[in-house]
Length: 450
Image 1 (cartoon, one colour):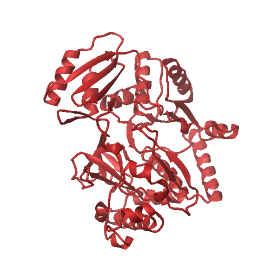
Image 2 (cartoon, helix red, strand yellow):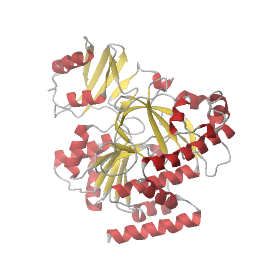
Image 3 (cartoon, helix red, strand yellow):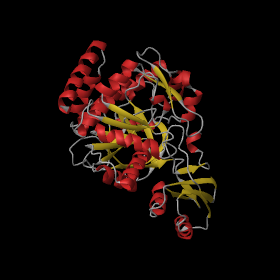
Image 4 (tube, rainbow, N blue to C red):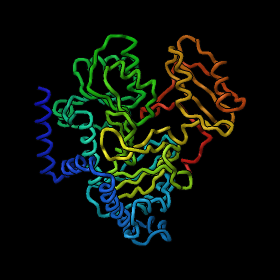
């Protein structure tokens, strides 16, 4: 019966898309074909799309007309994809200061959006109708990797208030009974709220669950702790936060299903994701270009950690060309055994401001998670750095069994110097207004805000 409902829903969605002139299913067909193309053929398509994007920027964007002056006069000058690395970077402050100058008028379906402001001042930008259609197509496309379709029973554990708009009665009926989606707002989740939601999910029997890594892990730990819930989806998708190994392990144990890491941002979504082969994150190269660069914009070789520079080939109303999000990661050489031609990211190591820098050494979040979560009594922790050689570690632990001397010693070893480490035992560590949780808060790193 579940299969019949899903097929009927997709037939309805195709008919509605056709009537509305929405190209999402045409784009889905293209994505299904392009994933298996040889890299050389795919790069020809990407080059064509990059030229169209740069041509749009040069024709309509006052910002890019000025920014690209001396770098490029004609999109035909981009003879191959490597030419992209010679163009200047786009930073958050550039968008904050030049919204009107970046915007390219004349595209249909334009709508405004903004980041959550977790790095300081929110960034305002816009998307257009084609971007939205591509995004819808890409989400349906990714579901096929997991053996799923839209209309399969889905649970979403999310936290951005803007993603929970006031819906009409008709919309609520459509989401609950046609799309078969259940939502949990990840902001301010208590154990009682989580318990009720998991009770509902046990009856609902979701085939697919996705959400923030921290919220999925919270649900997993509640299931493992209580032993009261049997929820068996086909797959789970973790997005919007770093997915650490200990979280993946607990989530997979609790739900007896694989969990896949998915990477995107508010500015440019559907950037990269793991397939069932789990050999890295496939960059959705049909519509996105991801470079790993240093702070000057120089491309770095595979295996070397650097900043991600994102170019979105689908949003011509507000061009994101070599956009520095602040996320850091590494490229991977070779091709995934799944056979897809999409290039791979080895991993996402965190955000530029989610790294503790002590004695000139970068210490990433996974060091702290593997160190502190060795103690099974730890429920939450957060590392705060607001001075060059000093950190405060907030810990939620019912029994104060934390070996603080050992943790301090390991931090000193990692930093190569004596570091001032203060521990604060607290009852709770609040999430951001978006519902996300930050393990690292580094107020000394300013690069992403500049």
